[in-house]
Image (cartoon, rainbow, N blue to C red; front, side, top):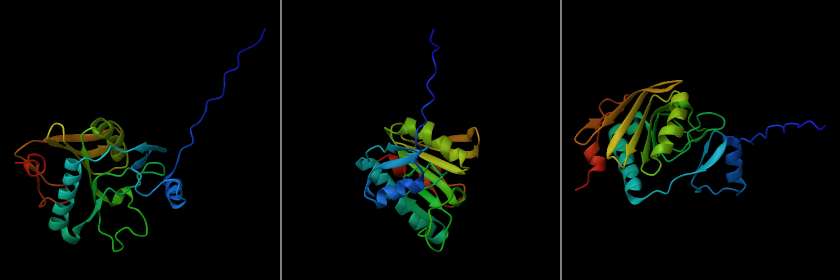
Length: 193
């Protein structure tokens, strides 16, 4: 009588940010490949349409103008949250640093605000990326929701996720917690003439 032996579990090989950067240096990945590292795996990022791209440009211009040297405005650049997660949010406001993060990528403590512009990626942003941001104690995340035409604001991170969520609707404005005098209007972003 033979005894069935269970096969040992197969472990996935988890990539790190350092390995992904080496893959780019060696030409395995191109710098403009639209992928991001999440929990040790590479995920293809959603294609960017004209409205998405325009809103990212508009947010960047608004923050450059209103913040000046008070923050570094990072556009679609990696932010390492852990050894194996480096999402690339559409916009991030970072604590100012003299080298503008040339010597090293920002750490979670450097990040003041993350903004994701989402339509087809809304579920992914809410269920995958948002918990990562909360787990890394990113103080505030906005999701510019192109489908519902509002801005979702997440604040007060905890191990269980964000404990405060606001929906900023048409006709309203929002300011980042770190910069109360910098306002972004929902109509200005999402309701075109």
